[in-house]
Amino acid sequence: MYTPQTFAAALTLVIFSMCCWGSWPNFLKAMPKWRLEYFYLDYAIGFLITGVAIGATFGSTTASVPPFFTRLAQAGGTEMLFAVLGGFLWSLGNVLMINSIAIAGLAVAFPVSSVPALVLGVGMAYWTNPIGNPAWLAGSVVVLLAAAVANAQAYKRLTTAAEMNKTKGMLLALASGVMVGIFPPCVSRAISGAHALDSYSVSVYFMLGALAATLVAVPILLARPLVGSAGNLWGYVRGRMAWHVLGLLAGFLWSFGTVFNFVSAGKVGMAISWGVGSGAPMVGALWGIFLWKEFSGAGRNAKVLIGTSLALYASGVAAVALSYTGQ
Image 1 (cartoon, helix red, strand yellow):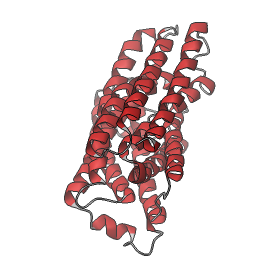
Image 2 (cartoon, rainbow, N blue to C red):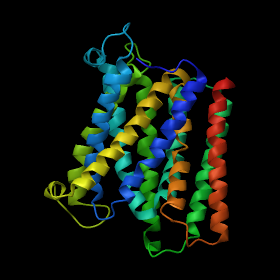
Image 3 (cartoon, rainbow, N blue to C red):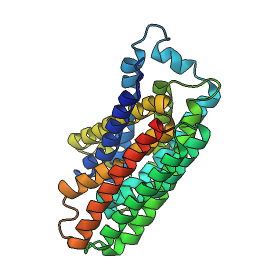
């Protein structure tokens, strides 16, 4: 079972995680004609399959521990429930996130949702598993929040046809951040309890909870969608194979980022791994700016603000990393 033995190795994995978390929505942006709900169903299936595959490979490399599937079967009931609950809450928040992306764009939805997600996630995760210097962590949260505010201000200076949907997109992003920010303490509890789960087992149970939330949320959103008109599950079956593949690939990318974030949390603590991973909005904003040209019509002030936002995100992520060395 692979686990990082040094802080540098764990930090590398967390940065990799950040890049994965900030990049998977590109697959959604690439399919403007495919319903969000159908995409999310493929995405959920993709990340569960990938999580199991990673556990069966990276999670089964050490002869001194039981095989991966044996560890899954022997998981403590309380810890397993915390992991499933964490995945369920995260997935509900993520469903709101993709709707916010559809309305407000990558460069805005990620940073706005990061405000509550960051404060709740880092604070509550540190409370359940206090690893890292609290002063550095608090400072990094302030810097990252300033980055999110700067990004939101940049968005206000855009003039687009979707101006009337600005408030709706931001409200969905904030609600998403609250839901996503609640899950890290659940994972922290699952990997630090009396019968603590290893990082690969907690990832699979987390993804099972996320899939369960998807199966609950998708039919509801098809009947009462936040974006577009109502639909039904038959439309999913009639989708192009390429669209299904892109959804599965999005889940593949997210799953790699999540598993290795949890693997790193065993070394540096959930507060730090989640804090560094919260730099994902910076990655998402870069994709939104350079690939999707979301700020192509912006004035000079908006571009200065978005540049300031990205610099603050980079500084905040660095401060989170330093909180481990400064403990």
